[in-house]
Each structure stands twice: as structure tokens, then as C-alpha cells.
Image (cartoon, rainbow, N blue to C red; front, side, top):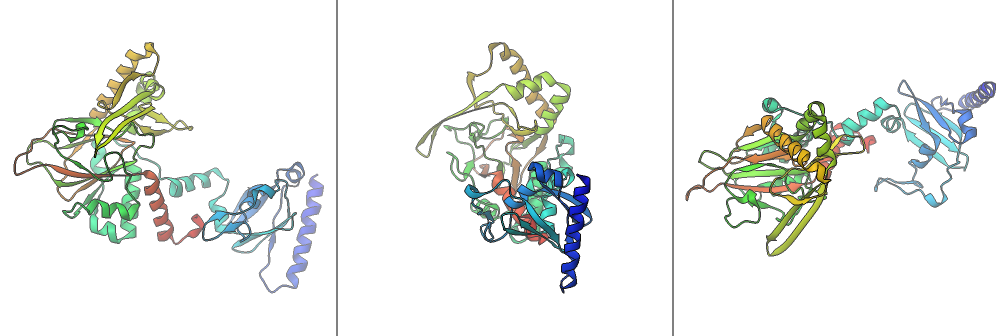
Length: 420
């Protein structure tokens, strides 16, 4: 078999040399394929790309052909007809220039790939991790309350509206640390709307597109009271929970109080996993029924969603934190023997969040942005007066929109459309 491979490679090289003698273009290099894999139906194409030997499955290359017949350039979408796609298609010739790879296929089709495009999609684990961290989603960095001053970055409102670099940096900081502050926002009910429109569009809930946080005695939401607001995440009763909360301070209280309390739920969860593994397990496995019932703008609602306090993805990583004492339903979905241990774990989670929390008081013109499915937030009690009524305007935006804008800005700033 190895002799056969040497003969085939020798013949391919001989053919390439002959063609190069009659060509005015640069010499093309013939790249090897795994002959044994080709015979067994799992062909691998090995390519030298910018000094690295990279391997790509032939079926993946054919599926991702970038020609006009297989791919729509403006829609950035595959148009290959899968009903006629041949999983057994094979390469007949693979050549490269300095910047591109050319492949001839056994079905007569021809493909061309840019080397940079291929390298970004390399199957080497280190390359895949780099793509994940720089294009897919920046890795989160958790923090203790003592570290809050170092991670709480501040950004100018007008600069965010006019500079792609400034907006990219703000969104990146928000995604990594889960919190960021916008300063110098105008004293206008439209300031938050105008800012969010630079990122994407707001998420509407039964509280509207924009909600006003101020003291309302006969309210359908305890957040609209001036009494102490316990740490929580907003709207855990939504299956598609708003990803980011943005709160624009128009009027801050002149009384003592009104101070925000913020804690990194991911930091607390990791701490519990290490130091209180059984309580951590209960908070990741026992489902809670989250509930909100009321009337807003004449619209009745009865929202229910079941999800643990700490949600994990298929990799065992934290994907979402749910926590709200007022909006935790009364139906316990777990086993009766789990009730007391779960309550103990629930209490420990809240105590640790308070222990590791940071406190910050917004000023008029501040927009406090934070990850609503990661951070717990609360507020100290305050008192209004006839001449001073605390007023905060809020809107939500989904992480899908933030990550989308972050990627668009990266492509634009890096001037690299091979990321797409």
C-alpha cells in the first residue's frame, strides 16, 4: 500500500511538472491524499497552508464548495442540492497557489478555496479554540466583588454611537465580564432606544419594549417598589429569557439608598462546585417552576417556565442562571426528599452571592448594562420626595443580537471577510 501511495504521488508530481513547463503562472504544488482512506470511503486531503500541514475531510470540502453553483455569495449561504449530493465523491486532483487551493472532483465538479478561509476552519483543536474564543463567543472571566472596580469598564455614550472600535470594545467587555457602564447619556426617554438601535433591537416582554422603574404602590412587579429589592435575575419565567438588561438612570434618589447590588452568578456557581458539590448538584438538577401572573397595559399574563437555578449545557458549562424569590412558583417539581436539601442549597447560593457582591450607585446619565442570565442584581431601599422621584428607564436585548453585532464589528475592524 505504501508503495502504491509513492507511485501515485510520483505520477501526480510528474504531471504537475510537465504542465508547469508550459505555463506562465506560478508553480502549483500537488498535495497528497490519504490513499487508504480514499479506498475505504473516508478520504482526507492534506494541505500545506502558511507553513502548517492541515487535514480536511474530502466530503467536508465538497460540501463547502464556494463556487456560484454551490454557494450564494450575497446571501452567504450554501445552495448545493443535497438531494443529489454524493457522499462518495472523491478528489481527482488537488493543487495550490500561494493563496488558494484548487480541487477537481470525481463527478467533474471543480472547487476553489482561499487558504485563509480554510485555515480559519482548520480541524486542529488549537485553531478551533481560537475561532471559538475570537469569533463565536469571547470566553467569560468571572469575578469576586473585590475585583469589581477592575472589571467594571466605563464607556462614553456619544463615542459608542459614532465609533465602531468603541462599540466593539464595550460589547466585548460586556460579554467577557457580564457588566459595563455607559456614561454621559442624554436626559431623554429616547437615549436608551437610540443606543440599543446601534447594537440591534430590543426584546419586548409583557412589560413593554421600554419599562420605567419607579415606585408604584399597586404594582404587578415588586421591582416597582421603593423597598429593598433582593438580588435576582429578571424574567426567569421566560423560556427565551432576555440576555442583557440595560438601565438608564434619569433621576437618582437624594435619600440614602438606591444603591445597586451586583454579583457574578458564574463565580458563585464555580465556588459551590468546588466547595459544596452536593448543593451545587441539587441546584443544577432540581427544576424550579418560575411564575409571573398579572395584568400590564390591559394584557393578562400567566407565565410559567421550569428550569434549575444553575443551567448547564451539554459540555457541563454554565449556560444560564435563574434566581428570583418573588417569582419562584409554589409547585415543587422535584422529589419530596430533595425539598429540605434544596432549600439549604438555595439559601447558600443567595448568601454567597451577597458575600461576593459589589455595590454601585448609578448617576443621571449612566446606563448600567449587565448579563441578565449570569449576574444577580438588586437594589437597596430608598425614599422618594415630592421634588425627587427616582426614575430608571430599562430595556432588554438578547445575546444573539449582541454577539451578532460584535462579530460584524470584528469583520469590519479586522478587514477580514474570511471570518464569514
